[in-house]
Image (cartoon, rainbow, N blue to C red; front, side):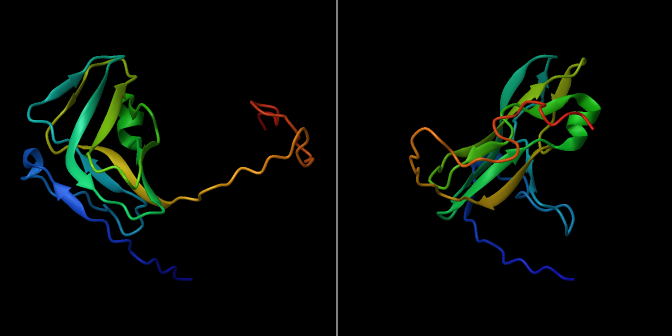
Length: 155
């Protein structure tokens, strides 16, 4: 079965400090997100436990009804303990500033971010808007009920 997706056009502005960097791109045909690159002007070292806002050098104009999710890269998390701190970070459709990545070093060793390094993924997804429907004091019953936070067990 072949799944056909329709690309969503997203205008992008490359800022001066990223003029020499390529635009984010999909690394494989099946990739869900594009890789965001570090537009740092000099290497940035994160000590264990430290966090920093890493610039990407791009601004985007998402169409209404979409968001962009900034997500960790699994290799950085597994190999170095480096992750996106507020994962997934949300870029709203009306935001026009530089896309930034809040990286945190949860590892035991310092981690240096080099210019052009792939530091996070950006996944564009549709957003569902809700309208609250007040029901008073009772919600519809389910088999699970209010059970959460491990209530379904480990296996």
